[in-house]
Amino acid sequence: MAYSINQAALITGLTTRTLRNHLKQGILKGEKIDGNWSFTEEELDAYMGDPGVRQAISAKQHAVIYDFLAEPYKRANRVCTILDLPVPVEEAVEIAQFFSREITDHGHDIEFRYLNERHYARFILSGSEDQVHDLMKAYYDR
Image 1 (tube, one colour):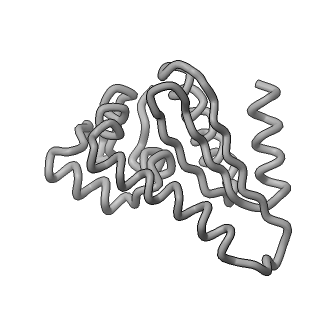
Image 2 (cartoon, one colour):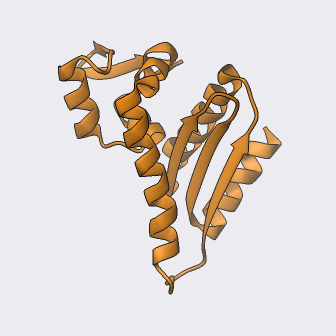
């Protein structure tokens, strides 16, 4: 599967501007097809494995959690879910693809972060209670 720059931004938690800067610097590899950036799983995985990028992604992941906790009075029901799954890299990538497709295709207002550690994959979902619930149900029903 190929990822768009928006999907790569959703998965990493980094902005598209940061991704474009990393493309210019050669940190991120990709291909421009019909004017749109496209990244293979291998390219995105290699990018996310870079130590500097890993640190930035980890900081962005934690920011989602800290931001959720820092807002004591929410205007609506909101949840933050962290999934730590002991899965092989290939399965982790498939799960990340599933979440990014669902969020993109269905216009969910959900913050999503993904980090693949040596022995597990971490997925963080934060958003409205209903949307996160529906997304988690779709994940377990797949």
